[in-house]
Length: 117
Length: 111
Image 1 (tube, each protein chain N blue to C red):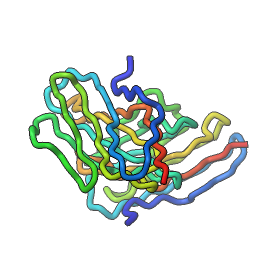
Image 2: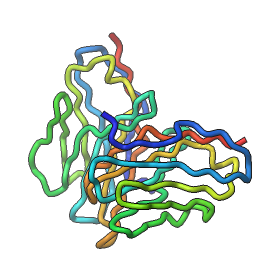
Image 3: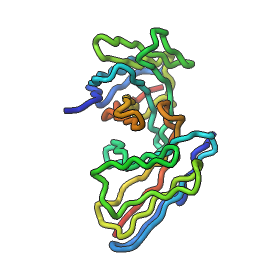
Image 4: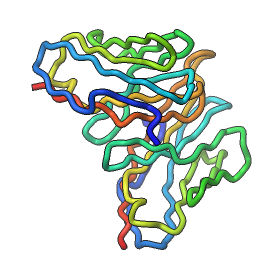
């Protein structure tokens, strides 16, 4: 069974619009972290934003913010004021503590975003 | 600004050859990783190395081995490459438990 699920494989929006990318996850751990990454056409994987399971703060980084619904095991990435450069593939990732010394990062299958000018 | 460096960018080789990829991070992180990225851009963890402790994904074939000289370097060696080893290999680093920063990747093609 998949641990990190990104239902939408593709999305498209116009420049200036706002987009929400959804991600759901499965974990039995009490403490875990969630991350969003963007995969560029150049091949680079860029970290965008982090959400810790223990945090109730609404995380925000520039035009990126998250909507974290812990009870639903859901985390959405919100990108405001979309620009054509936001085009790329976005990955949700779950980090869990598997043992005292072993952490595991699991990626979703990604959502490819196309922003039109 | 790149802080996780990988060399080479590309490598083409023949079945049975040995290859070695280098990775260096300048972020002062204590943990480094190697991932294999498939054609659908999905990332699969191969190894993680933290405080001289190596964690191996048990599905990784034995011909793959990581090599570390210090916490800033984690190289990947493939003893005898197979066609299915063709992929992009990504190195990453982090403070343990926090977000990982990725290098640009090394694309391996096995003929």
